[in-house]
Image (tube, rainbow, N blue to C red; front, side, top):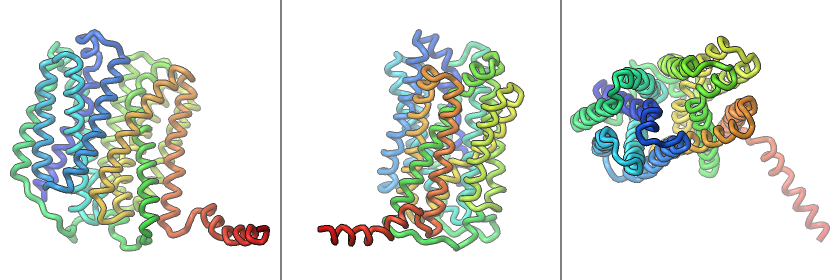
Length: 412
């Protein structure tokens, strides 16, 4: 299984590279094509739509074909897109290629995550943290590579690296084997996975809980997408930092994310999924509030680091928690969670940019806090439903409905 795990992590590393590749050379692209940042924003939106298309397509393919050919073809799709982008074709074609690249990345993310959920029974969170670390390393490495290539005036050849890696992984995955088997007794389990105590959900309640999970991951996608795209702008306009120093905040955020994701593999062996998510979303809210209230540059960098640590495992543990709550439904749950996360990362950043233009940076920051707070509220609702205790208002409604009905009958 080590080859399977390593090859899967390598694919996630590839998606981390490709996810940040366009953004890393965005100024050079805009200058080459003589387009504005508004058009650049549309390019990012096209990529998000490609990701959503990939989620929908893969959820259909996953039910009809084995994972290996899907992964091999997806890697080749990325290779084709990256090699073609290297040629810097006319911009409409460039946008089409970026769309295709995002479809391939989504397919890899969905298939690999689904396999991990099904293979690593009882320790999905530990296994998923390896994938998230790999993605984070790719996202952290790409800006460093881009800086080197830009400094030497060869930024377009950055896409050669990702294309070659994609081809290599496509070949590797023709030789990888794996089996859906019980977890080895010697391997560490998740705290939740090591316990059989779970309140069974009724058929109707499963759909409600799945809808709530889709909602909170939609909110999380918006939270992370807003911070990823506007972190530098926040430091420039709220803390009056120069552009160079402001860009460091993104590196600190992603560096902390990588460290936090590595730590998640250890922490999740001690904490249940719900406890982990509660601690981390509350920590994220506190970090954001202190960032806003203190309004100090040095403290701002510190709180960006703590924010990265707190947010590092929220997506992967939300995905695992959803599959744990609705067992034996990975082919349904995983695409829904991934798709709604991608949709949130497409919609909320657009709203965040609009808020900055219309309401100013301070109110926009509180709006970002409200996104995290909404996640917390709905997570508490999920925990309440999973514990078998109905929401108070729902319980009262059921108790009072017969009395209301009888009073109506008397007045007829």
